[in-house]
Image 1 (cartoon, rainbow, N blue to C red):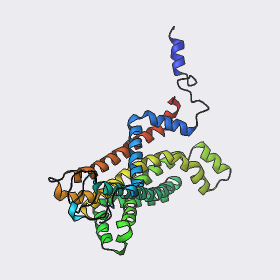
Image 2: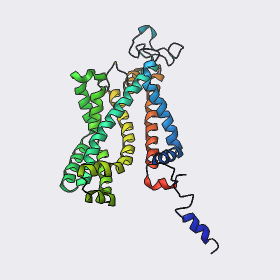
Image 3: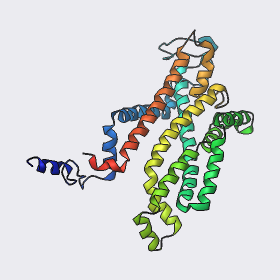
Length: 312
């Protein structure tokens, strides 16, 4: 009996240990929760550094496409900090510009996937019934496609088309990757809409005469932002890996536009003579994808409504 008050205090939702202070905004709570995830916070710093390096790639010491046969396969020096490749091009400059291309493809492809997936998932989850069945069958059809082989076929068609000159194929490749990868987003959004469409505040909005568009955009969709953001981070990582794999196989970003994938392709014949040509772009891909995945894990925890009340 002597321990009863202590037990009750520990379980009291209004105790200081469990209380969310009124001065805390939702953004502050999310940021505080995210920072407590040390791997996510460290990965966010690495990702910011890589992004800044890509954004300021125009400050690179050399032209990434400039060929200099006299300086082929040089090791690191004061002139070429990371050496040169088989055509005498500066490796550091190509890494920076390649990062810009790879990140751009990842972000553009994710934007396309989120736009299509959110639209399909919202309609399927909100209306249900026949519309839900029809849209989910479309999702199943797209999931049945062997994505890698479809991407290779479309990449080979793109390589010989009039659109191949658009940034070395950056924009059309990003659109193709996005169109073939929206299905998971659609399923996540659909599940969220199914769980939110019958809650009290949606019924209240409907009883007050709110239209379907307003209910979807103003009342239900904000509740799905968390899962969409988390899925978006994972989608960026997957898109970067997909672009790198296609470029390595020769069906992605086309030379002379540098990307980490085609840098790996160029380096495969010189692995033993100068292994850094393959190690450096591979390391950049690894750091970027791992950082994005850990940031996604941190955002998932930070946006979890069940954990917000425990943040101090």
